[in-house]
Image 1 (cartoon, rainbow, N blue to C red):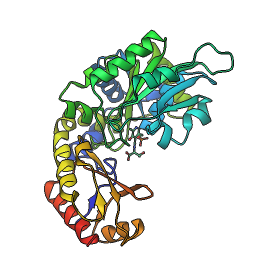
Image 2: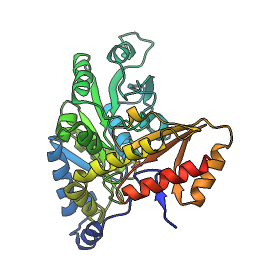
Image 3: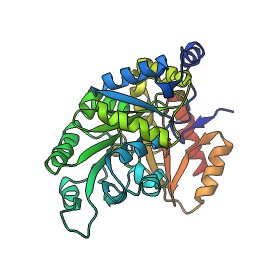
Length: 344
Ligand code: TLP
C-alpha cells in the first residue's frame, strides 16, 4: 500500500548522499571544539545568513530555548505571537527553565504581529512590571499556514526593537521555505535580527539538527547554555555531515514542495465537508477544517490511515498537511482522492 505521510516535513528520511557523508565524515570531540565537520557546518551556516558565528544544536526547540535564555535573565520578558511555536509547542521551556515571562500578542492570519500591538506590549519603567528584553518572530509561520514573512516586515520589527533597546530573535525553522516563496536570499530575511535559528531536520531532510546564528559574543554564551542544558555533543560530525548536504542540495528543491502543497489545497478545495482557504497556502503547510457532521475527526483520521494517508490533527476539527521531500505529485493526487473518498 502507498503511504503518504503529510503529518510533518520532519518525517523525511536522509537522502542517499546524506547517508554516504554520514559514513565518511571526519569527526572529533565537539565539546572541545574539535569536530571538523561541525565547524564546517557552523561556518557555512553563519556565512549563509551573514552572521559572525553559528552553533550546531540538537533541535529547533533547544535552539530557541538557548537563544531566549541568552537574551533574557530570569524575570525578564519576551514578546511573541500567540500562535508562535515557542509559545505553543515548546513545552513552556523558556518559563520552566529560564524563568522568562512570556507576553503573547495576537498573530495576524499572515503570521505577522501588528507593529502597534508589539509597541503597546513593550513595558515602560513601572516598578511593578517585568523588563521587556526580546521580541520573537517566526518565519515561515507554522500555525499561520506556513506564511512567509517579508524582509520589510522583519526590518520594521527590528527598527522598533532597536529604538526601544530590545533584541529580536527569529525562529526560522523553515527559513529556506520562506526565502524560496518570497524569492529572496535567506540573508535578507536574517539581516536585521540579533539571532536566528534554522533547522536541517524539517524540509531539508537531514535526520537531526538545527543551528543558531548571531554575533560571536552571543554564540559563545549560547555554547555555554547549550552545555548547561545537556546539549553538548561529542562526535556529532556524523549528524552535521547530513546538515552540510542539506545546505548544499536541499534548499533549491523546496519550490517542488510548495507546488505540491498548492496542488493538494486546490485538490481538496470544494470537497463537501472540508474547508480550506487556498489563498493562504504559500509554502509547504496547509490547514483544513472538518465541517461535515457525518463523521468525527477520529473517524476521518482512521479511514485515511487505513489507506496510508497520514495527516495531523491540530485542533478540535482542524488538520495540518505538510508536503516534503519524498512526496510527489502522484502522492498528492492519491491523498486527494483518498480524502474525497473518506468524506463521501
Ligand atoms: N515543529 C514541528 C512540531 O513541533 C509541531 C512540526 O512538525 O512542525 N520552530 C518551528 C516553527 C517549528 O515548526 C518547529 C517544529 C520547531 C521550532 C522545533 O523544532 P524541533 O522539532 O527540531 O525541536
